[in-house]
Length: 609
Image (cartoon, rainbow, N blue to C red; front, side):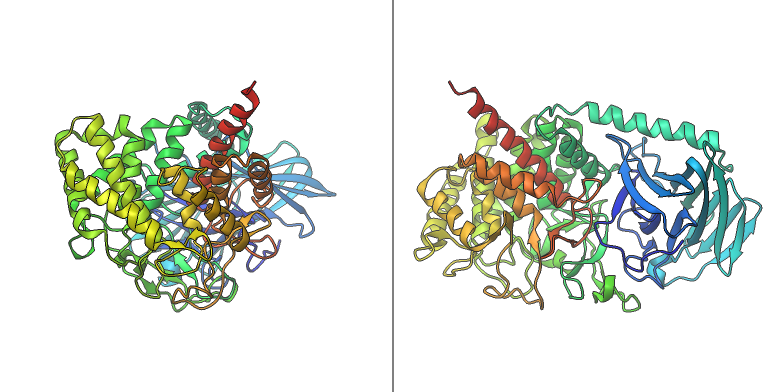
């Protein structure tokens, strides 16, 4: 069986164990996997360099087989089917989920195979390339176990069929008749990790159903029973897969380096926790009833506020590693060619050193939305929060890099000011609701000053809209959050006029661009696709504005851009292709937000006399 050098970004499913994750293409190729954590160096990264990145192929020898992929319903068990005249075979991939809540060095990727009809010959190639392909490894092949050793990491590949060496890599093959099964299991651990007992078909099958039961129990906790239950459940599972269980911190995406424009330079590392993304996920999780996950993230957020690790003495950084470490030095991996030549490939993220004042609004929004779980920190937690707002009262009125992490210099971004308003507004609510000590006079003055400033300096008379930055004319889809956070009511004249301006400028067949980088240079070459987060925020805003026919049609059309197993990357390209890191947590949490808002609005419309 041959494999595409670079399959489409969307041509993948995601499996994970709640501490790391792997991408599996519809050809049965694991072409992205990092361990022991999401943000660890890769073991397989053929998606970023076919020749140097490494991969793990398991599929039929018949090159003409038709490939199909699906998830076992409401789980993170991925099934890849191969159909040919001689037989039908399946590969099922899963990772046993973390059940301890403690960081683990050992992670297991299980790849089971079976023949469903006829006879199928499966072939396997395991070609790990450690440390993003920079570290050499040794191979020790004994009986049914191949051990790959590289500096600081050991991987054991064990199978129920014979393995043979291929230089420093391993091959294998097995012929199965209908009803027969086999398996290959990759276990990654520390430098001295010993091989576990070899797998058996019965043992792999038993573990498979344990994993299925785990996910079914988790999904049953969701209280969503709306019109798009399948899509919402898949998005919820995806958010869970992208959350580091020991801390409750979600990563923005499972991958790094996947381009926003194929062949371009907008290739970022998204395997970290953004305060913004994580904070907005709290409302999505609470809407579904996942209070434990929401509480864990707000606890993580409270720890960051207590730490005061921001740049230049600020209370917060915009992003952290999943364990809360703020060190995110960006480097270019010069030896990797990038996805279809999309260079440079970056590890780490230099945006971690930016000033983005909107994060304080998102943080307070999360703490206020999840108030029933966020105040467990008690008095000392509140004092940290109050100190943050006291600092912000002196610090909100200055330029920053903004939500989109532009590298073209600081500006007075309207969205940043709006979210500073949210920070004070929610802080005042929490202080009143829970009788907490606060400088409410100062916070109120700051909140009111921001509102007046935004409406005077952020308003463009010619566009009849709030614009991206003071004195500018560029529209910005981040402002679609305005009605959700309550800065303006969703049906006021000024907001509806802004929404109409976005329709004219940023919306293309219901898909929404973040902004126009030509009109508002962001310091980077090239263009990008429509931003899927913004499309779902657009649906949310339309529903709140009472434009339900348009909102529902836009939402339904957006579903046609999901991949074959219901996953979304960051952006949609001009031909409907998915672009950017994959899958993107921001996209899936905004899908949940849009679905719940639209469901509620449609229910209210239906129930009117």
